[in-house]
Image (cartoon, rainbow, N blue to C red; front, side, top):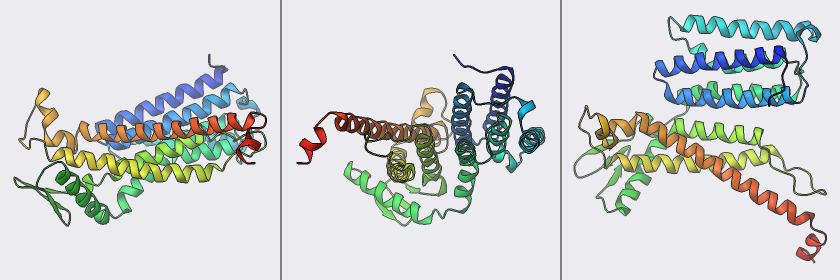
Length: 309
């Protein structure tokens, strides 16, 4: 059961309300990939704030410093103003909402300015703006070329006559252009964000009483590299699947499951993104399990000596 006072419940209610409002607006604006990223940010931020409340470390508003109180209220007021504006017209500032809201709620919870918890919340809140910047500035030409080559190679291995010509995958019946939406940049961004959240919420365990906890930065870099590989391979499978789809427009009902549009930029493409994120989570769970088993082995008297004579 969550242990929180009245002010704590008010903060959590406000967080849920802000998250629901932003996700609704993103879905209505047809930004499904951004909605997935925002959901990840809100969920991870809520878990950190809940942990802070569970520890009983939150302070009442009357005991907060003026700087924390004023900054927290201004950030939350700015978030509400952005939501009121976006209700009439889409505003790019909507992507900054998790960063501002999580920071504001953290300050109103009594989290110190230089606390590691505040830094983690701000990092989590920055995931959505980072995705926007990646989509805007990351060059997709080299990624499209590599995706086309690997996809055509996999199609050839499956018995299809296919070869890559730049960004094109040439098939006997049609050509497929690997454009910006086919490079899997959104999937890569989501997998990298999942890696960041996993390292923050589930840090690597220590290797025993005589060993220090391994660096979270090093573990994060290793998991990020694995996330990039997983996201690329999952997106490649999606591109291969597109070669077997029906390009007939206007398919409805169960027929849309074999539609090109469904797997290209519809719900099907988002399902592959979720699949890639799930695989990244499984990789981290496997790493955690191996680390725990190694830690238990080192705790056994004489195990280390027997292993290293």
